[in-house]
Image 1 (tube, rainbow, N blue to C red):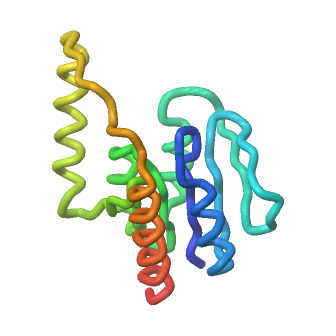
Image 2: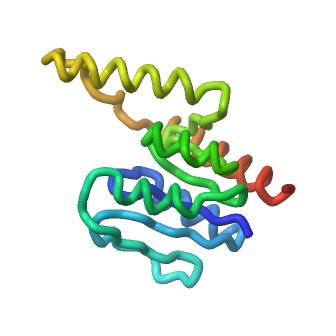
Length: 149
C-alpha cells in the first residue's frame, strides 16, 4: 500500500498532505523530533524519534520502499528514498529524480563548504502560495504513479 511519510519538523505543507491522504485514503506517518499536532484521523500516525541530527531521516529511510512517497526538503534523505525505489517531493513541489538528485547533492556540498569557510550563503527563498499549489499537483501525480505500480 502507498504510504506517505512527512519529514515534519519544518514542513510547511503538512495540511496539504493530510488533504490528499484523506482523498485517497492513504496512511500518513508524520515523523519528527518533537510532538506535532496532527488531525485526529485514523490515517495519520505521529512518530516522535529521538533528538539528534538525521534521526528522523534515518527512521524514514529505513522504512522507505517502492510504495513510499516522502515529503522532505532534505536532499540526502531524498537520495536514500530514491535508491530504495520510492518517490520524494520537496515542499515547493520539486520532484526529486535520479536525474536531478546528483546536482542537488553537489549544490548542498558546495554550500556546506562555503559556510564552513565563513561565507554567508543566504537561505531558501520565501515559501509562496504558488509553491503550495505546485506541491499539491506533484503529490497528486506521485500518488497516481504509485497506485499504478
